[in-house]
Amino acid sequence: MPISPNQGSTGGGTTVTITGSNLAGATAVHFGSKTATITANTATSVTVTSPSGTGTVPVTVTTPGGTSNPLSFFYIGAPFKSSLSPLTGVTAGGNTVTINGTGLTTASAVHFGTVTATPTVVNDGQLTVTVPAGVAPGPVSVSVTTAGGTNNGLTYTYVDAPTIATLNPNSGPPTGGTVVTLTGTNLSTAQSVTFGGLSAAFSVINDNSLSVVSPPTADGGAGPADVTVTTNGGSATAVAGFTYVAGPGI
Image (cartoon, rainbow, N blue to C red; front, side):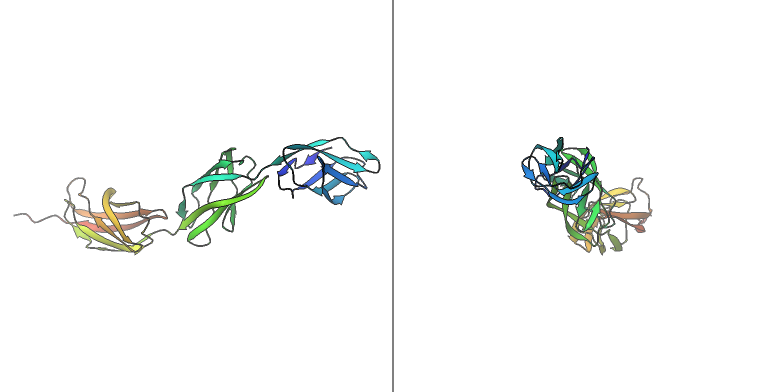
């Protein structure tokens, strides 16, 4: 006489189906000492809503013909989440987030606001999940659903990708040192700025502008350089956005 599922939340409320023979007219289904609510019954199955409980309990079906042999049902507590990393990512989604906690073995879904993703369980204390696309930039609550229930309490922030509008000035000597004001959008979480692949020192002015110091070229030569800004929301590149100009010679 199988029982499916054979585990559920300590708070009860799990829909459980018990299959077997001679089950018609079931008068009671017991989970340990507690009685479950019967919602459907045929000669070969009984569907019930589990009561609350803890640990492992025997499940029996009582009909006018007597009481069945017991089956085991395992109560599982709600998951506990302790951390999420990284805490931000692109609004388009696609990056991988790791969630640590306890009771995660039976995780079946991770909810990012109103959007749901399917996790990969690493072990009882950890899972990974590919972040779904967000509805809009900004923070959303993150919850994990397991056989033991759903637990909230973490926040993930969607960030739009940056854009680059202008660089002023847009040229300077190959020795570097030119202070450039870079304007665009979604720049406040800037992690790096490069000129021709070379890292540049920068500071965030606001979400629409950065102050950047051009680095010296690798070979001391002149020419155009792509400028790339990388933020929590992704990267943007101004192709040939800055030109290194050779100094005069006499």
